[in-house]
Image (cartoon, rainbow, N blue to C red; front, side, top):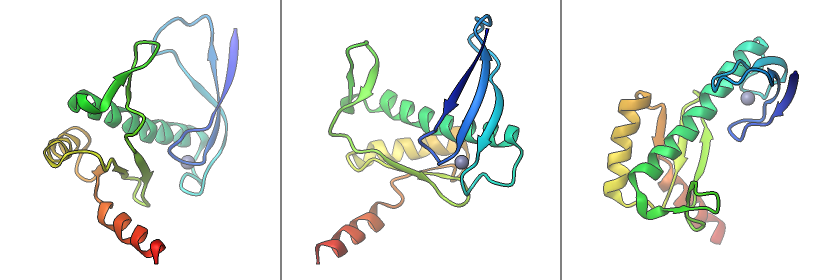
Length: 148
Ligand SMILES: [Zn+2]
């Protein structure tokens, strides 16, 4: 049976409707895009390109957070389902910039872990594809400004 799903990714404002076949038990089963309402970054592209691009960005974010959890066990806990998750008090801020590079801020990382993860990110995802804690100083400046 064909089923449709509406996906609202947390990496941009696209809304993507895709279809899949419930008979297909393959882990990598085919998802066929039906319709997209593209965000400002992904407009003027075919729906297939939008779907692939948004999947790529969303996967990059998820994989990098998995890398963080793998490499920094002290900020990880196990939830009721036995899945790893970041502890409640760990702040993760992310956005994709205009070049669609992932900017991710995790202020609680120790500098050694931060350095190791920056190296990992560059090797695994490519130069600048994942920018870890690059905007930390800007954030500090702007929070000071709001105090005044
Ligand atoms: Zn988008």
